[in-house]
Amino acid sequence: MSDNSSQGRNSSGGRLFTGSDPVRLSVTTALAQILVWPFVYIDIFMFVVFLKRHVLRAEPRYLLFAQTLIADTAFLLTTNFVVITYQVFLLLPVSSCLPLSLLMGGLTHVSPTTIVAMCLERYVAICMPLRHVNIFSPGRTMGFIAMVWLIAFSKPFIDFMIFLSYVSKSYFDQPAFCYYEIILLEDWHMIMRGNLFILNYVLVLVILVFCYASIMHVARRASGDNKQAASKGQRTLLLHIAQLVLCTLEVTGPLIEARVLEMSNVNTYLIVRYFNFLAFSVVSRAISPLVYGLRDEKFNAALRFYAKCGSSQISVDK
Image (tube, rainbow, N blue to C red; front, side, top):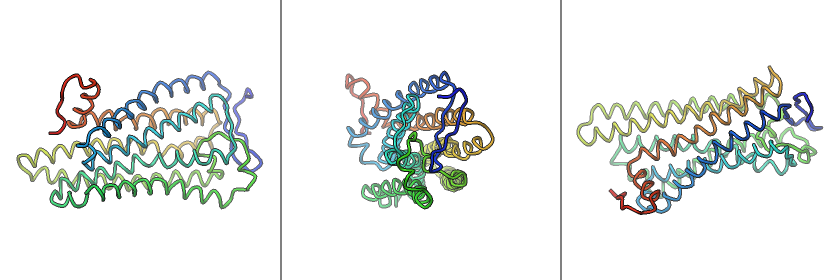
């Protein structure tokens, strides 16, 4: 690497971001490993517990929760791979990086979209309890899950179609790091992506606020067991809103990074990029298993049972 940071451009206009501070690069890479791997192990453990308990697999909210575990684990592993390749300065042809980059782009959206589905499931369960069994039947829940993944991956697909409209064929043979920006060759495309993300998550936030207000209204009118269930659903939605706030901060990253790149040098851009990854990508994906999974009585009991290797019997079928 050169002594000065640089933003190289290949013959097709693609960017190669390189920095000049090996100490910063080593520290940020080490921090990524320290933060990522514990959460990967926790997510895998929770997913195994989910698979082992039929009572969990039969409920729509746990089916949806399992999707966040799958998506978050895959996202952390793929992005961590990119962090390591950057550390060792491993450049791959753009054609080889594209599938991984598009996969990361889609996985970024799966958890936030699933959070919306989980909030709607709680809204139906509390506000329309008689219709919940029909709306979120096992078959329809799987259909909702398929829709979540379709919506999540439609966004990188659109970016890819835009990318193909102006990229030259020679670009696919150029060496690059496997970050998502390899399909955002134009500044306007990067800024447009960031703006659309903000618009998308404002819409999602409106949906969550509507669900929360509706459940809060039911909680005020209910009594006895119904009031307790509504209050619990209300607290669950507050957690989902907190998760969404973190996810929203994460997806506004491309817009912030684009602005930083315009106004500053590449080293500053890379610092902001790593901060966004460590603070928002990892943290937001730690909220789901550590808060949602552990605070749920049924899931918590199952986790404790398997954590103790079955040494003591804990009922999870209540």
